[in-house]
Image 1 (cartoon, rainbow, N blue to C red):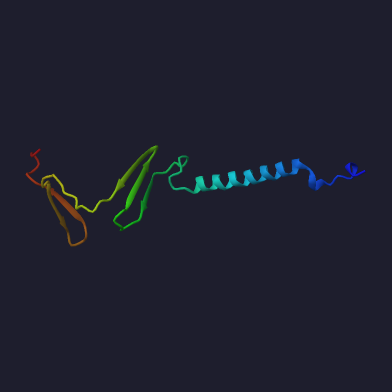
Image 2 (image 1 turned 120 degrees about the vertical axis):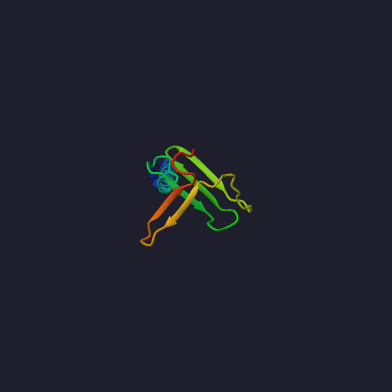
Length: 107
């Protein structure tokens, strides 16, 4: 009787158990990848990530708390629209002194 001498290798439940083991390994690897990511949503510290530094397509991503801010570089030179606010002097000992323009009563 061949049915009484069944081999354990023919048991279909063993392949299901092997698939479950495979999925557990994949889930474990994905969890490790998430934890090691600098922009991990569960991390408490603020993070600055610079992608392609010095290149034309450089991107800076800043995470402060739960807020993500992304800056992308362009080939254009930045221009300001401000006005002169004062003068900074470096002393011989290395200290910097800022002198506002217009005196103490100027707004």
